[in-house]
Image (cartoon, rainbow, N blue to C red; front, top):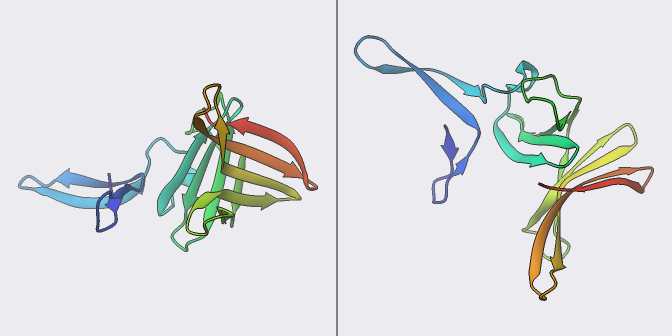
Length: 150
């Protein structure tokens, strides 16, 4: 696996370097995306989010040109299946109180907005904060789906 960043902790990209043995040594052959992904999704720079809810599996990738890509499947599908929906050109959502903190990713498609990884803090029965992430879908400004990350 390929990691990026000069300082610890280094982040995994979900990309891999493949080598072959030429009889004397291992020689770098090619850099590839995750081998279990549908071929249409193989080209990306790095995985930003992998998100599973009760009904969906969502993957957010950063592309070589810097734009974001959303891909989703029904929860019973395999990642090697063609995604049900692919949206290019998302944006990073920032925390209202601290602009340096990411609070999910926003993608728009045909009047529908998909928010992946929206974070909320709730209090449990003992008063402790619990952290939750959601997939939220809006249509015409109205929330039509909100599912917690499993």
